[in-house]
Image (cartoon, rainbow, N blue to C red; front, side):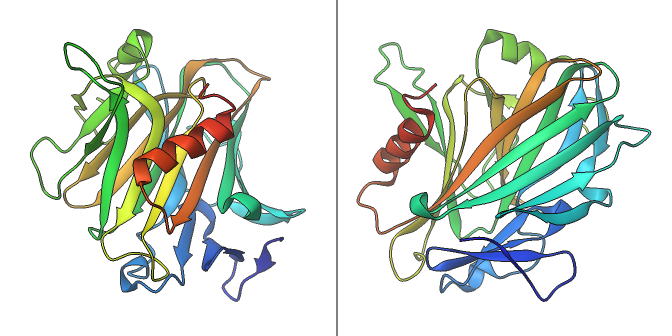
Length: 280
């Protein structure tokens, strides 16, 4: 089923299972209509937007604060930013409903007009405190047992936590990009097991157990991170490799609305395995 033009200017909406997805332009998307007041608190609780664009040693811009063009592209919706003084590239986010999987696939892309070493698109998702955030991180016991689902507590200590893909990605976190702009001194955890995160609603969605599952491919995502203090956020760090003028770099992220499950962690891993065809 295709998106349809919504009443609001520069917004599109479409059905996703029992819910409604609204594309808000540069702010990303919102999911409403699932019987929970906490999904409808306001425009700040939006998901899957390009928060920052970065490269080695610096933040280039906060992309979602820049005007963007929103238009239909067949059954999808594309949000596009023209090149600017800060980012000499055409940036885009293409949102596609996948009804059969109760999912939204988003391609984040950049068509570069100059070289950018360590180019990154930093993707943000903001949830209310009524969701419990979990991250699929590597078990760091002496004798690992597999994936450890780390659950962040509301207003806990050390909330600026992050998990890298591998040792090279650890270096990307530390190359100076988080000193520039709005600085963040990320607290380091073990490496992630998968670039896979869940947000489980405390009261359920659509009168059943309900959660949002967000995932990326390992090759696209050098790290995952989040807060759960003054806001409940989850982030994907996409790219991190050198990008050249004339090159188009693109990364696909999937968001799944999951209701009526037996075990969230088991089903999230199964969803990731099916989407990546083996967890790559």
